[in-house]
Structure formats: C-alpha cells, structure tokens
Length: 262
Image (cartoon, rainbow, N blue to C red; front, side, top):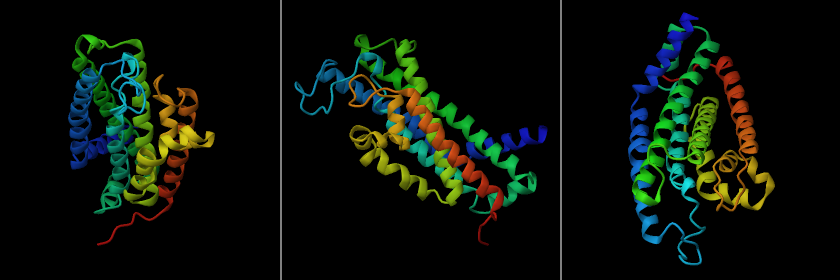
C-alpha cells in the first residue's frame, strides 16, 4: 500500500511539474475567467432579458441569471481534453514509461496510479477554473448578478455538473491517448464534437445524445437551450464511455510493449 501511495505521488509530481500542466492552468484559470468577464460586460450592454427577436445576433435567449457564466466553460473543457490526451500519450515518449516501471514493476499499480493522479489533478483544476469563471461572471454583472462568492443553489449545482463533465471527458481522452499512444487521436475525436456535430446531433436525433460531448450537454443545459436538461441520462452515457475507454486502455497498457525509439 505504501508503495502504491508513493507511485501516486510520483505521478502527481510528474503531472504538476510538466510544462503542459502550467499551460493548461494558465488557459483555464486565467484566460477563461477573463473571457467570462468580457461576456458578462456584453450581457450588460444588451440586457439580461435579450432574446433573438430583440437582438438578432443571439442564437437563443439569455438564460436566467442562475445559469449565466456556464457557456464560457466550453473553452476550458476543450483544453482539458487535449491535456488528458497528452498525459495519456506522453508516457510512450522519451522512455518515461521505462523509467516508471523501474521504480514500480507492477503495470496494474502504475496504470491505476496514473488514473488516480489525473483524477485528482483534473478535479482540482476543474473546480478552481469553473468556480472562478462563474464568480467573475457575476462580479461583472454587478447588482444584476448573483453574489460572486456565495452564488445560488442552482449555480452550485451546475458547477458540480460542469466539474463532473470536465473530469470524465479528461479521463476519456486520457484512455484514448493511452490506447493509441498518440495525443492527436483523442483531439481529433473531440474537436469535431465541440465545434461541428455535438449540438447538431443532440438537437436532431435521439441517438446523437450518445456521443460524449453531446451527452455532456445534457448535464449543463439551461432552460433556454434547445435541448433538455437530463443529468441522469447524460451522466450514465459519459460513465459508459469512460469505463469502456479505461478498461480498453488498461488492457493495452498491461499487455503491450512499452514502446519508444532510441
């Protein structure tokens, strides 16, 4: 047990000392809240009661004040997915995995330690980034917004849903990265869902809700979104995806060669 704990700490140190971790932190903890502040100021200019009829530039009406701020969260989610894929694929570069296995020969423990370390890191950064984004949004709204620190019950509920989505999609991207030993594959898998087919599928067809990004929309849908808020269904779909990805990547991890070229 002590050996396994040391392996987890070792994986945490590797993640937190990597350059990609600090880049992701800058993007989601600094840049994303700044984007939220800019969005909040634009909401004040057009009014929180704006609709597509009064403001044609809007695709949908602005949500109730409890739900404002969560539309910007998609920016950070994309980078978290890229982060998960890079962490999953990085072990096969520069012989990092060979060094790790010299310290801990059990591949089962190494894989579990990697998943737990990524889970801890993604949970921490997700909560900090999403809470900061929501808080700064309502700070920018002034008297029209919620209290920037206490928020509301609905806002806290959606913070929880958003954190869950960030964690699950990061782990899913990690699993795909481990399976293919390449960070490009999970990125190519997710980006079209974020920018092309995600919302389109969930709006058009029932089966479209079974794609990961489309399922995540069910957890964070506001009353003005054209799709329903169904966190139970979305959560189950996401858990099935991440379970299958981790089981498959676990099997590939313990059965395949460590790879790498000298």
